[in-house]
Length: 197
Image (cartoon, rainbow, N blue to C red; front, side, top):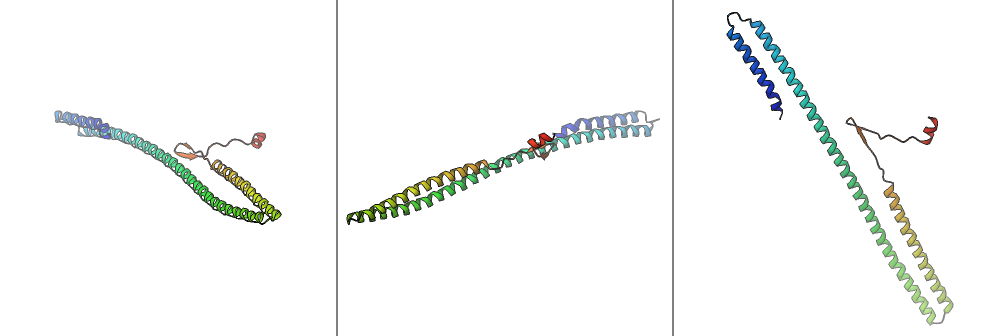
């Protein structure tokens, strides 16, 4: 505690004052009160300077502690904000993927129903002996199914590639703290800068 840092100075001041008063009382007949007062003032001034120095050191220590706590809390907030941002990006990506899968499932069901209807129609045509028309219908249904499968695979690969690029494209910043101030990190020299130098 800061009280104990000031206590020795207070004790010294009281002892010096008591010694001056005892000395003045002992030599009361020819005491030079101006000299005793000047000695008391010098002692008070020295103790005052000592207390001022102690107070300055205490203030600097407290300020350094507050700065350190502030920097620690700021770093904690930055880490928490980055984690929250990452969580939000992942949640939105998962929601987009779920909605895309749901839309693909609906489209797959509609396509499946249409293909079953076409194959049923082709079956009816085969039954009534319109073979050429039935084969054209079956071939068309098969081509539509193959095209849809290829398109779905391309969309899936493109979505994965886009998600990977988005994850890699997130900005990554480095902050360098020097003397309590944030400074920009040193930039590497470009090849054109190297040629000029």
